[in-house]
Image (tube, rainbow, N blue to C red; front, side, top):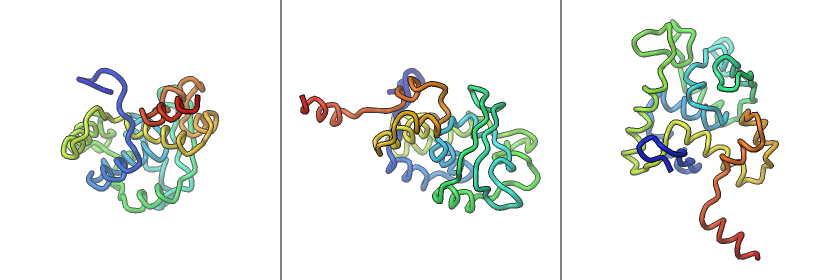
Length: 185
């Protein structure tokens, strides 16, 4: 658990993601959704350009996440799920900016991760949740995929992790799951 900005962020459950998403205003709701549905870092999502997600004002069939905004430098392209398509249809990028989430003060620059983090933190506090951060959507999405039965290689292709070991670190195991596993012995 993250305490005073130290440690790993808690993974959002799907129900927590949905509740948080319903409470966040745009553009923060769309940043959260892209982090969840693409299992991507919020820092990269904040830097997306409109053309990475939209074509002629309509959501693209795939999201492009260029390597220049990703930690590992590798470009990713992911199909847009129906749920993400609904989110993108309900979001209106500002026409004067090339960025999907432009800065409030300078539309020629993307929103800063710290601005999104502050909005997220406010809603998490209102919901009574602690130990979460901007990384919680990515961790939650990966954990959800793992619990749904996807193998580590499939999750790696979705999340863009360089190694299977990295994927394993994101797959949370609850105390009840641990207890159930031990009961098999």
